[in-house]
Length: 528
Image (tube, rainbow, N blue to C red; front, side):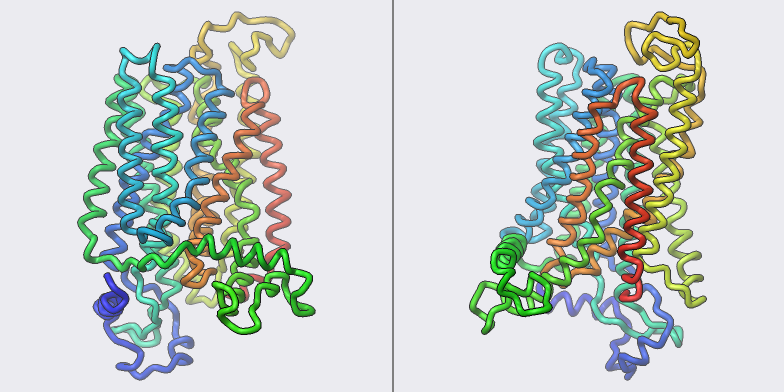
């Protein structure tokens, strides 16, 4: 869809233009700001993301138990491989953004990487066949998740959320039927990201609820279901091709950004007195470089905005425990025969699916009407505090796991100094403490995501100019890669009896960083 067609599509969504209703910008700004309708094109992209997340979580949430039970790996090794997969999935987001910006645009990029992703799911399914388990299963598993699935995830994640938000009309306009209300672009984008995030978790909810029980009967069937669902998602996405506004590629903005920053840093001593070091890239006359002076101003604004993301790697390091270390804990807790340890992640997604509409329809509108603006920094800080409290709970819970008979801390020793014979396989060492005690941890993390993760996506999109949106979104998504890198390092200690110290260290670090974050950006909400 061309830029002209996009304006026409926006006109279809926007019942009255500002000119037609003769409202000035000041009058529109004085009204109560509300969200507008979500365009059909955005809904198609959101549904596609739902299917992709079903495939991602439906498959990846099985990895930890699959590697321990089926591939016979130790907890620490399985955790390291799992975090490595998470790392590559998000490190490749930058590559995905370059492909979209320089060569293909967002639609073609998402479609091509989705096909690569599907190939990976197929290879994963084939690798789990019984006849291959002692021969090609491990190398095929690694190839499937590290090359195809990780690359596919990165190419999709770097483009899909911004693509959904770009379908929203850019102008603010008066509500067509209710006086005193303004349909606000920023508030509509905020809504888009909340429902986008809800779709992520509906997909995760279904994937985590369906594939684990099937895996108890047949691993190949369990991995085959994500393939089918993702093919449906690709079909839905392709069907909306003529409805999308897709900005044409105009060269890699990431490369241009890098060259501008590198130039500014090398010449920082030549910048005008009292200015930021990025101002060293200003040209005396526009056209001296491949960038102009406005681009340099945008770079400085983006640089300051991206500082907000510096705590996110630690947040993601804690969050990613759900896919491995929480499963490690659950493997050795008493549970019903129908329940697998990773199935509790279903609760995390359920919490998000239930609470996002409540916050969107009830809580946030009430706060806005009352004149209380809960800005992005306040929301992110709230999410960080909640996840920190969650890991205090997890630390205490792990302590009680190690104090519970008959296997205590799974080293063969008891707290009283005695010994106990350990089963041959760690999955058979079940202590007398219920897996249901893990539920509060999944609930806490789910609520923290609404405040920290969904708001982070929104902040990344709103903080950047149109030209730099892909850069900022890629940087935000890359924070998850750094979080996974932290997790890979911590995986060295991801074996019994170290988990109490591991969780305590993560909780302590998150609390310290949250306090710093709240202090450092305490005044930033006033600018939103």
